[in-house]
Length: 302
Image (cartoon, rainbow, N blue to C red; front, side):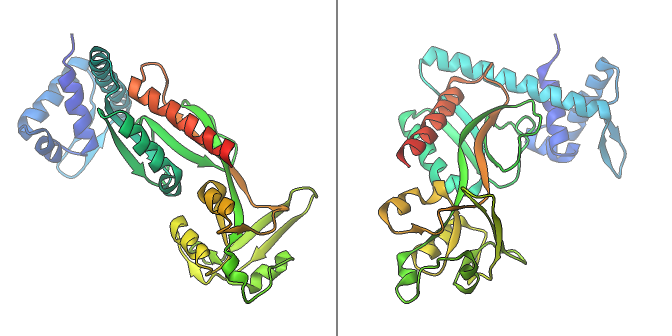
């Protein structure tokens, strides 16, 4: 029977890219940690790590072994959590989620907090990031993502949650002293809000005709925050392209109005990705179902 501690030690050494930081994190001496890895290599009959005073390098087989170790250790943790949750007849454990910043702000954060209020023994690590995380290597249970292109081949399970549509919106306040635009070309002369990019333009496609049109604009406010863009639009600072899921309530209330509804901005899909339902912790499965139901309710209510 192999010692799983050695697998754990090896994973930590690779994660910390060296023995010194790994030994400090583990609370054991560097010499003991090095000896355990050496014994592991001897037992396996392979070199996992190349050692020299200047550079830390994991061998090719060491990289593959590292990925297998991650899966083994995750399964051990899932097994223990499964037993614990079964014995206690309640959902519990830590769930790690990644999600784009804009969707965390609305509506994912609310969905997560509602779920946590319902299940007091569940803890959540919610990563708000626009970078694509590696679900397997980073130990992410559920990854909420947005795609604008066809899904590439993947070993992950993917469930679509909602459309990622943008709408061109403005506050009625903006038009108290100016006319509402009737032609797309007029947008270039009106105050607008956009991302912080060297050159900004909106690509429009007509919903009924085979027409496309691009409008270049110079924004009054440049920002990478959808929240800031929405706040500015509500204040009448300018016109903004915002995700529909982000402004549904304001469009219903009339605080914002959609401009040029006959023209469509680029579309995408919000989806959730995970490694497998097999072996999934009950709490993770419950949160997955909670997300699916939550986004479905948004569609019904729009």
